[in-house]
Length: 480
Image (cartoon, rainbow, N blue to C red; front, side, top):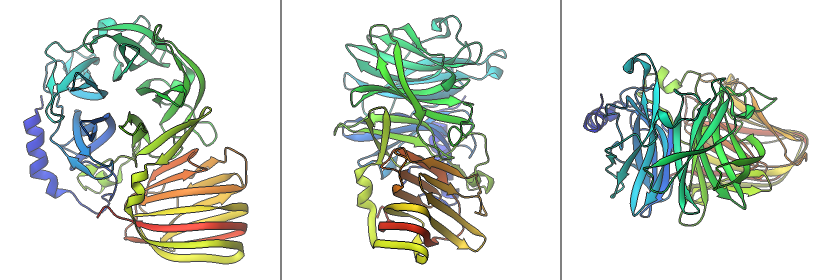
């Protein structure tokens, strides 16, 4: 059994051992150890709160705790003491969940997970509550769990039942919990409550083939006249450029019926086509913005900072503001990110004919804004040596990120198509010490990937044929 005191003491005594080589500049990371899913994303008493799946004792997944950080602007985060540790008899891990405010208290709802080895060979997952009135220290409800395995409906898995994310609507609290059928088809279970303590099963969303073999980390909210569910689908089958990771993240547009708990599905698509995006969660802030943050890693592969013994693994994406146009999800970086800009370069109306090029040295922590029209091709090459580089290739109707030529962490090419089938393109590219996030086609297509290079700068060369770059803006980015 682990304790909060044990975790906080370990962090205090070991955080100085972390290797800073690939630490990110303006993305949230663990102080030491392992980070995965964002949890309990919320604004409470004026502060943004980000909780996350956390194992402080090693840079690999282990018995889950809830790490905690707060921020005024979603960019500069201040670490808090660990919020939850698996310190009760009914849990050997505190798995993912959400947060909600009730009667001025901050309620965390999470999965109490018991490993099979700790429970006579059978994994067990139930849903629990912890409450805080200062936003920093949390007391677990004395009669946890609040949703037990006895409240799982017939035909649903009795062992995979996790990631509750509560919300309030029409006089009731609701929560969606990740699930699968006994035939291993993903689904979401819907529960209803008057007080966050006493819950009753209401309905099931799915099962659905787009939910993979298990649906997890659901988040339901209202956006621009529609209801939207974000969820993570385990082992969803790939389709051309989509769903190519071992697990994928989808958004579902439709209508949620609070009386029956049913969800009428109208549209499903992938949220981010890159290598490293998972388990996104959202909040609605005091400005009315719906803001999303995801885990900027992926399961089923080596994590370089652990392999190099840097004593940390995992990071969160740049926060993104969500909008809906019809059934199309639009993602844009938060406005606060523009305040990071320093030392700009601007180029206008460059015609590429096969011989023209733009070249300059750029910082690893930077932003590029491009807009133009491509008939044949525009290529951005980010290099540190002749045999150590990556490219972004813009063709008519397509943008491709290719890191296969990087020495430290090559990954297969990933690409997105223009939603309007047009030769016009626009990109906003955010680079940090070991990450790249590409917002393409007005935020309708996203590519997020971890990248690792030895030195602090890239040589950027832009070439093209039969294409026009109307504008190129380059900014160094700094939190200072």
